[in-house]
Image 1 (cartoon, rainbow over the protein chains, first blue to last red):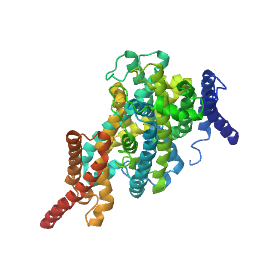
Image 2 (cartoon, one colour):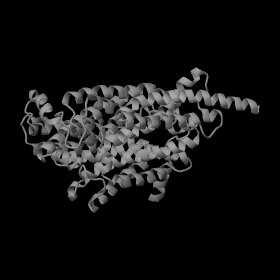
Image 3 (cartoon, each protein chain N blue to C red):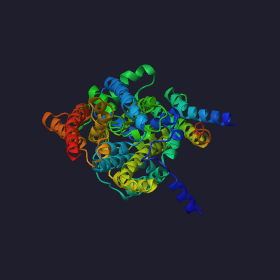
Length: 57
Length: 470
């Protein structure tokens, strides 16, 4: 379960970054890029707190 | 019931202000990497990067100046602050009290707390430029010093209250939040800059260097701004956190480190925040200047929103929070050192109130480069005093921790070092025109030398008077 949530978190981080490169190369519009970044942001803040900061506790 | 639970939680926040950190409370390197990355990928990055553009830094000067300046900053944390933090494991304020006595420490703490309040205030102001977007409030411009709309005041107060409440729950909560936000924030910084490159005429990687020189960092300052060179960038990158490393304020943070060399974890903050984020925010600002025909409006929120949408605006808010929080925490520690019996959370609440009031004034943002340099310069001499006290005085057969050892409330050597250093800085500035960015380096040597010489004289006198009494 933890691995799944971690994977989702990392995918959401990628979703925050990668669309900008697609905008740069002209594959998607800036508006689509912004929407994907927002989705990445929401998923990151929902998923990351459940596994980050737990290692050293 | 809820009130009792909250009070109990707040009262249980133990920050070890006057005792060394116990072994079981030490933190691993991940905690520091997250904290430094979060703290230095901050609201101020949305201001500093653009100000380099405004000051006409050339592209090669920026990239090389930032590289070498940040190397020097990391080395300062690693070899100056880290070893003393691990050796003493107490806050800067408590160590200073042992060396300088409580009178100088009280003055230092007041100045320090005030500086921290201003710094945190500028970050709250930056966050407010993003929070204000949906309310369509009028944003401040480069020439604004006073708050000019009710909307601005309301938004700044709302952001200030939220930030203060978070800080009241202590370092652990701040560290956890910074850890979570840090990787995401740097992604947004990079993404926002990459996404707007086509609007600046960069359509392939090979276009970048040409446009970087012609359109982004042109080497020509905006009207009314001074010209910055490689040396300005290098010294600013090195000294913008001078109070934290050379000035030893981060003893309060790095005392939690399991090993002395965790000071190297500051590299996460320097190269993600003070390199990539400054470059990225400079790119965003150059687009704003291009599209607004060099408008004087200066509001990071709308600039980030233009490039990255809602995620960009959220990034500005959180970037401001993650820096304002530890800064308010540090200011709270500074005040608590004067009144140790005050509860941490109550002191933090007071500091948060002062910070929020300061944030109302846009001048804090518009003059950030000068303020940051001045703030480091003012606090730096006490870092030199600590350094000499810990390493050099014992080798000269002099006593460290003068105030504690001789049971004095006032160490004249520390006071002389501080005052003479600042007076010499004013002298160099007024008579030789040395800019504030370059005064820190000679100032450190002056402070060190004066402290050693004056300690020799003062301790001899005190020793003789003790012999006479005996």
